Image 1 (tube, rainbow, N blue to C red):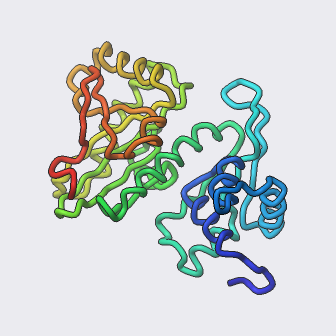
Image 2 (spheres, one colour; image 1 turned 180 degrees about the vertical axis):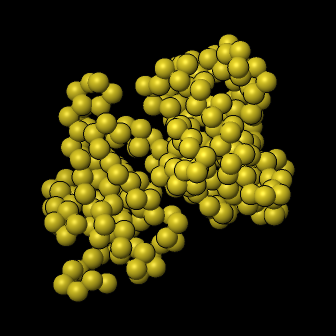
Image 3 (cartoon, rainbow, N blue to C red; image 1 turned 45 degrees about the vertical axis):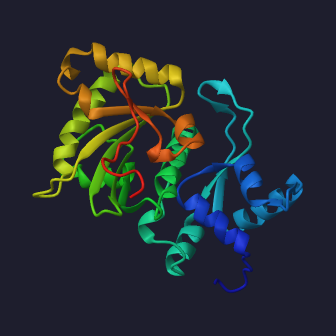
Length: 274
C-alpha cells in the first residue's frame, strides 16, 4: 500500500465498488457503514469520505438538479486517479473492470443507471457465467473511431457460460431524455456497429439490450420500435427491460421483453443452471 496512508479493508471494498462507476452517498452508507444490524451514524461516513477525498482516492459531485428537477440526493462519489492506480498497481482488481468515469452534473443520472447495470452484469460471475470482456462508452468510442460512428452504445459485453457457449450484447441505457426519432436512429447505427465490432469468423450470438429507467418509458420505447417503418425487419433483434427489474431480480437472468411485449425468460439459450 501507499506510504503514510492507512487504508482499511472497508476502504478497499469501497474502491472496488466505485471501480464499476459512481454511487450516491446513501448507497455507500448502507452498504459499507452498517455493522451487526445497527446502522453507523452518518458522521462516521462523512469523516471517512473526507479523508479519502483529501487523499484523492475518490472524488465527488454535489448535484443541485437532476433531470430538470431540484435534487434531494446527497453527493455522488466516484473513483479518482489515486484509487484507480491503487487497484491496478496492487492488482486488487482486474484492470479491465476498472472504469475511468468522467462524471459531470449533466451525466450523473444516466451514468448511475449504467453503473447499476454494470454491477449486475458482474453479479452472476462466476456462478452462472464468466464475463469475458466489458467495453463501456469510452472503450467503444476508440474501437469504432475509424468507422466514424457518431452514436455509440453505452456498453458491449461478452460472457461465456459454463457449458462453453459465448453470448455478446450491445447495451443502450435510456434515461428518458432521448426523443423517439433519435432513439430509432441510434438503434439503426448500433446494427452497423455490431458488424464493425464482430471478430472475424465469429459465430457467437449478438443481441441488443435496451434498459429504461421506468416501465412507462420502456413501453414508449417498445411502441416506437414497433411503429417505426425503418425498424420493421429489425424488431426481433432488441430486448427491453427496466433498471428496477434488473436491480430487484436476477440481473441478466431476469425476464426480458421484446418490442411487442412478449416475455423472454432467458436471454442465454440452454440450461438455466449452466
